[in-house]
Image (cartoon, rainbow, N blue to C red; front, side):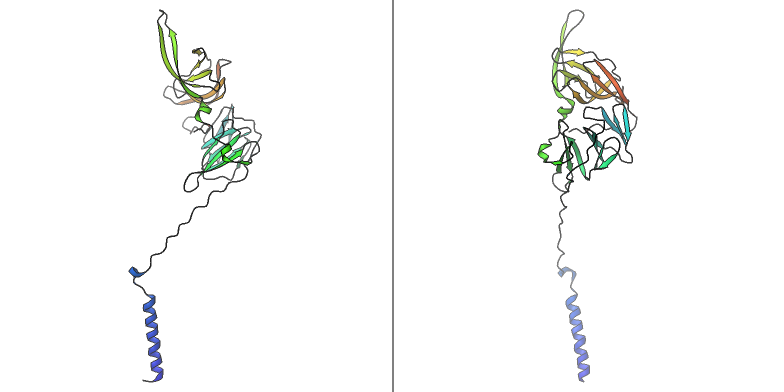
Amino acid sequence: MTRRIAAILVAVLVTLTSACELSQDDEMAPRPKRTVTKSPAPKAPTSVPVGQGEISPHAVVWAQDSTLHFGTRQVDISPLNIDSFVVVEGGVFFLSRGELWFTDLSRARGTGLTGVNRVSTTRDAGALRVEVDAGSGPDKVFAYDVDTGESIPPDQADPATDADLRGTPKRLVLRSTTTDGTASEAPVDLRLGPDGRYGVVGGDGGGLVVIDATTRKRVPLTGVVGTGFKLVRWHNAIAFFGLALGNEGEPLAMINCNMSRGSCTTWGKIVPDRSLVFESAP
């Protein structure tokens, strides 16, 4: 065998050996390592927009799709949609497909907050609370002063409760006397206003009745429409607003009632077959 032929045979053997070493049986191959990547914690802007719109937390406000109603007026913010909202002094913060926006009723501005699950305000509506999906675990909470728009510690923005907005639930026993002199007693469930004097019966769908809790007598009200009523919130100790309902429980109109005047006023009709949204509550 010549040296040239021997060299060629050695080269072939080296090549075959290398191929065998690189080609492994699938069962012998090490399993790929699983890499777990944590979702980054959501970041929030250091401030949110504020405004000087003619609106306050004491206004009658509701929304249908892209239309925001306030008092007897309305604004259209399409192509955005209003999924939930809160009212502050000078404007409205609202969610549209998980993104938080602000409007002073003249234009809508983004806040930079996305993936928002819930927006709320404190009892006095002085601070905004925003709960953002953190990807895993509990929501990340951010808070802002609504006067300055600046970020504040979340523990300074405890959200208003259902009782703060719709009044404290209470059961009273009412006494009455029939024409033949027979006395009777009947318990009623109502929602007391801020100072506990007046209470709304039927706030969850029954007929609207207002009771003076100190005298346990009915307060006469003119201007009531519909056969049912759903309480939205108390403005103050003597005034509240809510949704008038028809015979089948269908929404008819928003009405605003004042005990000092003993009357209710219709502030707007409800458009049938369109989503109806009230201020966010627990």
